[in-house]
Image (cartoon, rainbow over all chains, first blue to last red; front, side, top):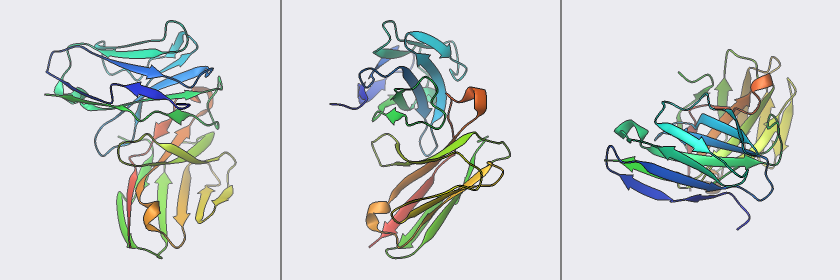
Length: 116
Length: 112
């Protein structure tokens, strides 16, 4: 498809397990974002890539969270030693612009993570 | 604590009624966007407002950006069941323009 694709759509992890969430942005999009959306709340910023460079990771909640985009296209968000508070929808978004302020970014459908 | 406060959190109305959703902050934003999110999907952009006092219309939806660029409103005229969803406002600030700050969302239910 032509949109942002995320996998897996649903993931149930046991507490302490490591998980990896994948994002395929729209082809050619320079900027890629990860957001975390807890149940009943708005999305919260996690991290931002411009091509392969991670320019902002100020929203990552702990050092258990790690994101990469080694070739400037596909990105992976990894969560180590998952905790119950990590349960949320993880949204990936991409944009053709280097500066997204005022410009359109396109969200994927999200990866739903439940930690039991 | 959300930097952007949305109100109300939940709104249930009958088809044909009007509704207004508010998005308020003590911070100035260089741009503000409104999204609609349906269950199991990601947010979809409805509109971007950039200039203080700006008003934009999208069919039955009217968006306004406050003069001081700290607040915004979304007004829906003659709501339809298809307008049901989670409405989110999101602001971008200057040099941090690549980081959107979202409000907590307003869940709208339009009953036929």
